[in-house]
Amino acid sequence: RRKLEDDPRQPRHLLTVRGEGYALRTSR
Image 1 (tube, helix red, strand yellow):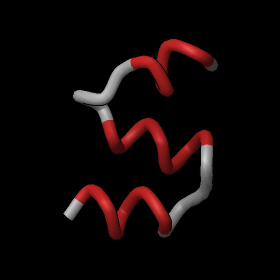
Image 2 (tube, rainbow, N blue to C red):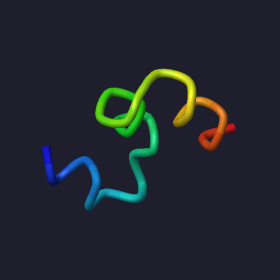
Image 3 (cartoon, rainbow, N blue to C red):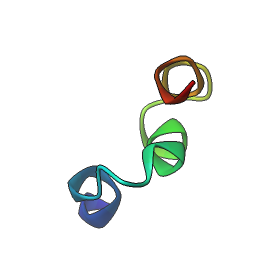
């Protein structure tokens, strides 16, 4: 799961790696 963190263009994937909520707030 390092590709998701290396991909700044896919902030949505971060929510699956960091947690549902933190990414959702930064994504918007």
